[in-house]
Image (cartoon, rainbow, N blue to C red; front, top):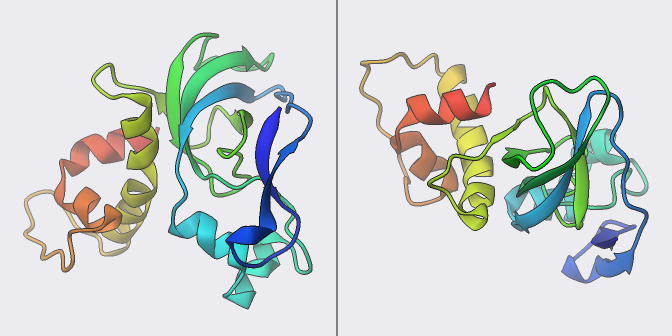
Length: 178
């Protein structure tokens, strides 16, 4: 399969289009044929490793997971033997900042991680671009212990996180925390 691979930290030029082996799903994983992904702040931060502390999770001297792309949407092509939540042919989208993979033609993700069936009213592009901002908005709202009915000022609601925070958050939480 083709993927954008980076084998060292640095500027965007360290990422190259390459042929790599197609991943195989483990017992609790689905194999997703990626239809859409993004390049976002999480991908850029991990690629550059500008914040050196991030290397304690991503690899001290070189990246452990060399295909970025934490936001993705696509179609389930295979399922592991233990998977019960998905079927072949399901349209799905998700967020994977553990092992990434969205910048490849295929990725694997555990069925219990942040992956869910796509609503019929979203395109693959819309679904993929939805997740990172919603993930961070949900984390921030939970950390602030915001409850239904409270009023909250979202300062700078023009980016992905702020836009998700002012959206219909009940839908976001349901979609992401399955």
